[in-house]
Image (cartoon, rainbow, N blue to C red):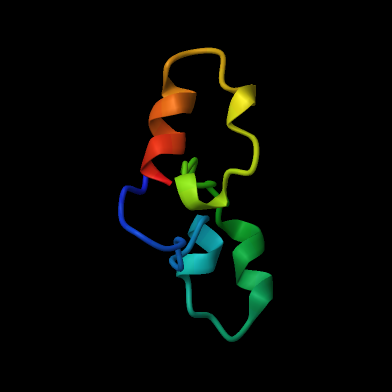
Amino acid sequence: MYWNYGTWDGARSLHEMFDVQDKAILDYVSDYKLNLIVPEEIKDFDKFKTELGPVLAMKK
């Protein structure tokens, strides 16, 4: 959960964190995704089925 103002500008996967010249090296590294919730990027808060939707909408 990203609670700061503005959008997330960091990496969202392990591959994005690496600064490699030869992209073929990344074939040998698992690419773990970052499951990140950024309220600023959510367009439809009605998709949430719990109280989290209104909380995120208020944060936005």
